Amino acid sequence: MASRAPAIPEAALQKAVTDLCTLFRLKWYHANLPIWDKRGWPDLVIGGRHGTIFRELKKEDGTVSPDQAEWGALLAAAGISWDVWRPSDLRSGRIKRELEAIR
Image 1 (cartoon, rainbow, N blue to C red):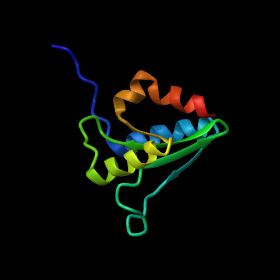
Image 2: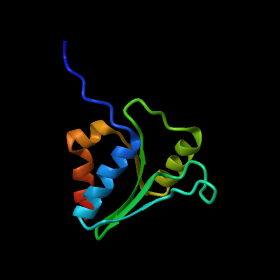
Image 3: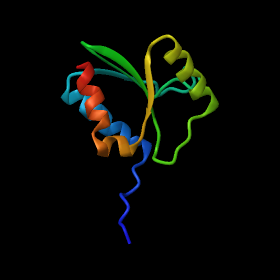
Image 4: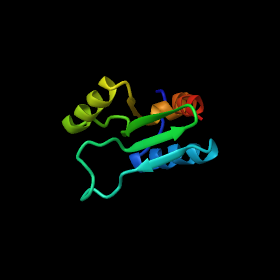
């Protein structure tokens, strides 16, 4: 039987991403006061000398809400980089590559 990677909660994924941001000297913002924030706004806005990206963080089997999908579509239509990152993206190196591209 193949072993499965342990589940990584969203909070741990966010910590790993923000730690990489710090390592790469990228600026990041996490909207964490729901009373003031708009429903569906992406979890992280990350900026560097070569661009700014908006990312929604989800556990491996997490789903994007309709509000999150709407924000994503609006941002993408405006030519802004929006996407969803999952723990598998951390393990594959995708997150690191995308962060390195904007640093």
